[in-house]
Image 1 (tube, one colour):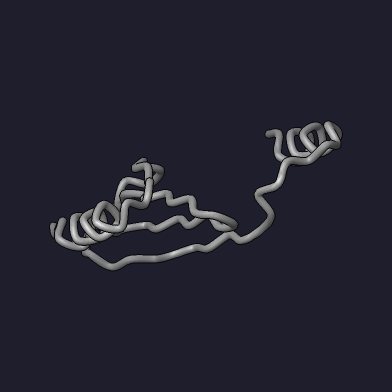
Image 2: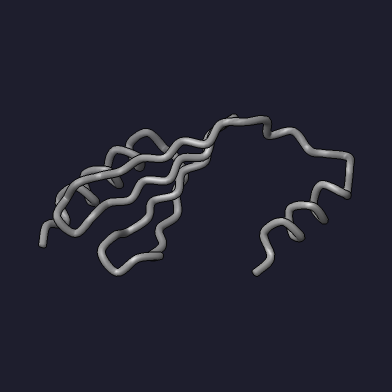
Length: 78
């Protein structure tokens, strides 16, 4: 098992003063969630050291329409 890729990434984010959180959603990865202006980034760091990156871009502005929240909950409920 290699942890070098994970620690290298965390050190780079720390040096850049970019806020992140860590979580585990899968047994073979650590998820590094990064939020910067206008973008959310999910980085899966795998046990073997390879990395997959997903980028989500969009507006960070608040929505005045409360129906948006209701729609999101309804469309994503189990």
